Each structure stands twice: as C-alpha cells, then as structure tokens.
Image (cartoon, rainbow, N blue to C red):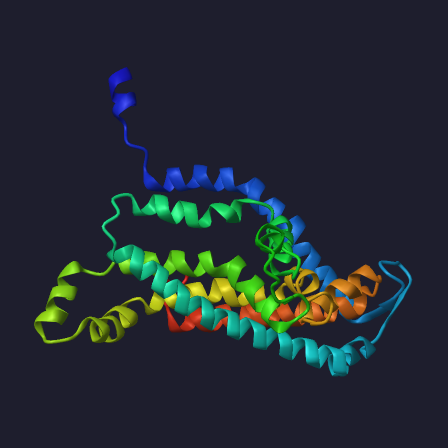
Length: 286
C-alpha cells in the first residue's frame, strides 16, 4: 500500500488546484496595492476635494487639465522621446544581439547576464552616475584635462539616459528570437545567392519581428510614463507627462493628477490590447 501511494500520480486538475491556493496571497496583494489605487484615481477624476478628504463634490472640471498648454507640450514630448528612444534601441539592440548570436562565445548567456547586471542596481544611482558623466566637469575632464560639452538640460541628455536605461530590455527579446531561428535557414539563404546583408535584412529581421515588437513594448511604455530621467538629466527644462503627474500629486492636486494618470493607463492598456488581438498566440510578449 505504501508503494502504491508513493507511485501514485497526482491528476493535473489537483495540481492546478494546489497552485491556485498558493497564488491567492499574490492576488490579494495585487488587488489591494494595484487594482484599488486605480479605482481611487477613477473616483478622484470626478470629484472636487482638498486632497483625499471625505468632503467632496462631483464635477468634470478636472478634465480641463487635458487642454492646458503644459499638458499638451508634455504629452507631445513624451511621445517624441519614447519613439526616438525605441527606434535607437531597436538599431543598437539588433546589432548587439546579432553580434552576440553570431559570435563563437561558448557561454553567451553569461554575456547577457553581464549586460543586464547594471539593471540590478538602483535606478536613481545609475541616472545620477550618468548625470556626472554628461556634465562638462566630469571624471574625464578631471583625469585628462579635456573639457567636454555640457549636455545636461538638453534633449540629447534625456535620450541618452533613456537609451542607457532601457537598451537591455531590447537586447534580451531580440536575442531570444534569434536563438529560435533554424540554423539551416542561414545556409539556405546563402545557397539562394543572398549576400550577408540581404540575408540579414530579408531573412533575419522578419524572423525576429516578434522579439523586436516585444522589446519595443518594454522600452516604449516606461519611456512614455517615466519622469525621473527628464527631471535629473533634463534639469527641469524638458517636461514629460510623467513630470506633470508627479508634480500634481506632490502638490496634492490628486484630482488633476488622477486624470492624467488614468489617461496614461488607458494608452498603455490600449496598446497591449491591440497587440494581443494581432498576436493571438502570445508570441510577441515573450
């Protein structure tokens, strides 16, 4: 009897039931700290109150923040910098991933680990380190006495900061897509007379499109909603939609900040829904 019990195979539905019970604390955490704040912001969108107060009146005047010039400029800057950063990350991410894929390094995942290792450090520490590097009086100036340009407070500084921060998120999914390509396709493309460049452009790039889209999502969305990079490297000269949301909540304008936060959330969720409809197998979101 003991041997039979030891060798008894647990049915899959019982295994999934046990896993569901283990996941319950996570779902409670998710509902309390993610879903509940969203409902609170939706509520604050339609009320006029002094901060979070039981005394409030229903109104739609909070939506007037969407027509303010600063909001329109910030939204345009967010879209502009997000798209530019994503395009630059696609270019360099594809080159880095393909160079690593074609290399003869035995442990390629160790190289990828070294690439993403800086991501384990604090985000603000990395931004402040980049702040010192982009300053005219940086470490190179102190060591070699060569004055450099002061990029702080410019568009270039913000783009460099975004690319520096989010490039590993582009390299990883592209490299994963490259690893899934059948090696025989490379030989078949060369046998058909394609040069290395044409093989890369007509064969490799289309086959890694799912990885490119996945990397674009992971780069575009945080660039669209972030505010720390523009605040530190832009020195307050460049206003993004995330900066206005941060300032609104800092100044206890929870109503206007909630309007912009929910708008940004709708844009992010809408983009994910569109991608899921076009990719029903779920291969894009690796």
